[in-house]
Image (tube, rainbow, N blue to C red; front, top):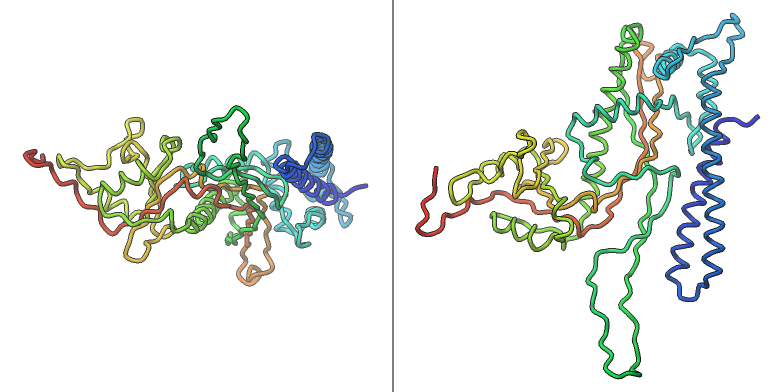
Length: 404
């Protein structure tokens, strides 16, 4: 009988094969030497790989469901160590407590689930709790909704994109039999992702584990949500910090800001652009006045608590997570959904111990959460980094008195 981890490994391998086949198809399409038959053959192989990957995923889901339904008994006392509830949350809580208490059935099951490094992954968070975590994440200031998130099934992969570039007109051919030259065909760029593991440990009092299921779930959901938002925000900002020098310019006036979003940002993406700064930077921007003495930042019509600049949302990040750039305040202008892609493996997991890491001595339980994703800079031309130390008020036009 196949183990869950064997099917899982086969599924991941099949996903990698699909990515490789897609890359080969892309290479063949831009290779003038490739024939129609070559491309069709690659597509057939790709389609077969997709079918195998999807079938393995179905079998993996079935195997996981069976593992939750059929529980081995504890041979020591011939009693089922846990009594699963019908709903997924109840099953998760019982498994969680089973991990802490060292129930043999739970421990053996978790030992069978190994990651790529041969280490125990822990208890995978079920879909309904994952949804609750994602819902709670929206209550925090998360950058994730601003970027493009792609759910992936393989730990590594590649994507082929066409960078933004100037498109020139076709060449004019005067003579009827004139020679037609080559076009300035686009240059494709390959983006590679490699899923990374992000983890943290929290300490639980053992009294919490004896509370109601709702109390335990509320704690886990809230803790994981906050840590996940902070972790993903940090990874996104790290990628934005890799912008080339051509996409960086210091500003000191409202006119300089206007030049950026009027001239540097593509009009096609300006409609979806935002301004991102930290709390200290926002405090400065929020005091800038126009030539009539009105504050430049205005409340959004649909959401009065949200400030806008030129009709675009101003997103404010805590100074701890978006620190000042020396003596300057950070400011990003553009469409982050075009600039950054987040590849999400969606395999968040938990593991606990009441023995190691000092838990035994202090009668505590340690909770470790692991999240798996990667962030890559996608289209650097979609955002401009414009740090500032101060933004001057707009000077009133001659003969036009400023109004207080």
